[in-house]
Length: 450
Image 1 (spheres, helix red, strand yellow):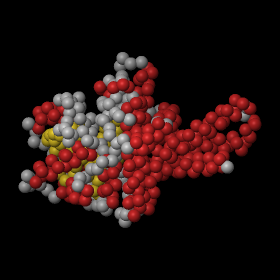
Image 2 (cartoon, rainbow, N blue to C red):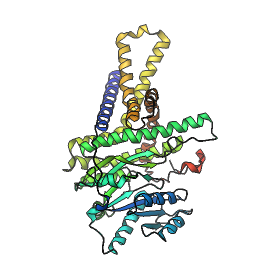
Image 3 (spheres, rainbow, N blue to C red):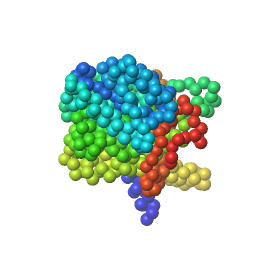
Image 4 (cartoon, rainbow, N blue to C red):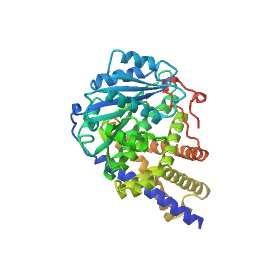
């Protein structure tokens, strides 16, 4: 009885995961290409939430002002204890396009959503004082992390038919890349260099192919998700959310994805633009990666409550509801797939050690081989796709090897999903910021509460 139940659950999970991986891969490889639009057709504002970011914020402001001279940069200092505010003030004194939004305790450090809402309030006040302010439909607000670097063509790409060139699009998300890919780490051992390369490479592959593939599929189902860094929305949309809920961003640990759900529920379309990107720093040690992904998994748990509303909404199609449900449940599906593969692999190894190959029988061997192939291929295909679409300098053997490593990398869900569930049961929703690699953290110095 239990064997039959185990086989049924395992087969269902493995086949559904393999089918989903196939769908997002096809959608990614067949994504449409759109021409750039007119940057001057919109008014641009970039929100940069910061807490203790003196190491990077000056460079971020300089990069944004150089690439996008017409854009306004709103830096939200969330009660930093370092020189973040002073650096921003030094810019704003001679550049009217740079603005400091200062938050102070006890009202500060209450979450990224609250910080973004403070910038929204400051922008609205600034626009009320500007008699030449354009219609909110033509005002676009973007979110950039403190270490984020937008590509030169970002505003042009999202101003075109890929996003805001279409009146029905209320929000857009661009692709994310890892800025520390290829870093050399001088003075460290080959073990440390290899480990850091593995983590950075996997995160770069994850965002540029797997996540981009998921977004490409969502573009077809009408459920493109917002991802924080590199997220853009019309000011009119933020105004609508503010009137409806009291603020554009809410309290979920995935405040960006949650905001995107509200955009869809109000009848706006969302878009994903892969022809441009924002770069950010990949996490280079396992404890911080696990903490980051635990927060994301807990955000998934919180956002599951929106599924009934999406199912009842006239603005979300049945395929869109199915895609959203699968995405929010994906950590659990991954756990089943990975555990199933490990169990099957252990069964084969045990049988071989105990009895040799012959007693397994042809049928058993084919079953185990099928489980292995179906379970591993959905992970391994992303290595060759990463080479063909992103890093063409990779050799094919390296691409195949990287693809197999995706399975190893994704196994972090065996830790992060149970931790997220435990935190949710215990009612713990507070988090500290993920500190930068340059701060040379030790495991004991990590600032997160888990």
